[in-house]
Image 1: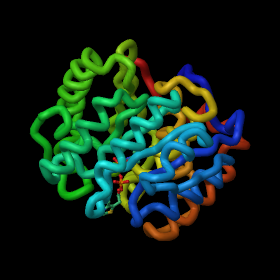
Image 2: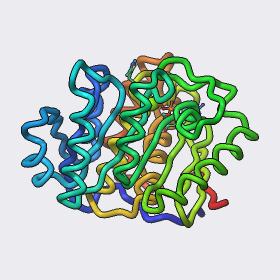
Image 3: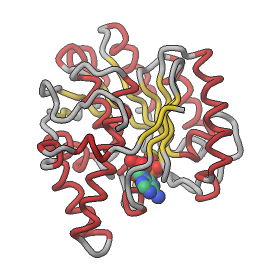
Amino acid sequence: MFDFKPGFPLQSSPLVNCITNQISIEMIANSLLYVGAKPIMAAHIEEQDEVIQAVDALFINLARLPHNEATHLVHAAKRANSHKKRVVVDLVGYGVSQFRNSIGDALVDLKPAVVKGNMSEMRAFCKLKSHGRGVDAGEEDTKADRLEELIDALKDKTLEHENTVFLATGPVDIIVSKDHVVKLSNGVEYNGQFTGTGDTVGALIAANLGSGLHPVDACINGVSYFNICGEVAAEKSRGLNEFRFHLLNELSLLKDTDWTKEVKGEYV
Ligand SMILES: Nc1ncnc2c1ncn2[C@@H]1O[C@H](COP(=O)(O)OP(=O)(O)OP(=O)(O)O)[C@@H](O)[C@H]1O
Ligand SMILES: Cc1ncsc1CCO
Ligand SMILES: [Mg+2]
């Protein structure tokens, strides 16, 4: 059996601030509630200092950068550092524009606990050739040899960012930290085929950080729990929208089962 520290059921009910996009904000808030965490979606720059003191972790998502608000993300991450609260940065759409890349780079420079994205976003972040389209990964970027290339590039990143754990999601997910490389392989194709699934995984990781897990374990739990919920949902549904319903429902149920036995992972 794959050895990791289980995070679900959560040991505490962490309060997580999510600065995220209008597309998946409701799904993220409800997903946190379904697993027993508490969401707050406070985005205004003026309240970040007080909010960060009240919460257990911060999830920041690059998905949509409204006029004049991009620098607010950097401000929020700085407040989190001042108050020693851990941060997950989701590099949604990295590679789409120089502007987005510059905000992503500024956030990574603040040494968040976890930096994540899909395979194409993480390849673009590492300056590797990327086949992403908008916020979706390109299939070519998920091939086995491309994964090895990305693992090497992320290992180089950990030399400059030794306290950050990098996660790239896809059919096989890779986690790269200073000391570990992990591959995870649960889930079904549908897991990545409705919008905001990566965002939801990011919020689940933040919840695990908020309840005190090591960032590598937080990533293993966030990805594997979400993907196993997908495996269960696939047995019960036909079509993407029914799948989405069952997956989200399962977020509230799977934690009370022996789900950790189903985790397919390896340290490489
Ligand atoms: N083909 C697949 N098979 C199994 N699991 C998958 C597959 N594709 C994605 N996943 C899983 O789905 C989740 C979301 O990953 P994905 O890479 O699609 O995120 P994303 O592109 O950032 O999503 P979004 O931007 O819509 O929020 C992850 O947990 C990942 O492991
Ligand atoms: C930002 C964004 N744009 C289209 S869908 C989506 C949410 C996935 O992150
Ligand atoms: Mg994404």
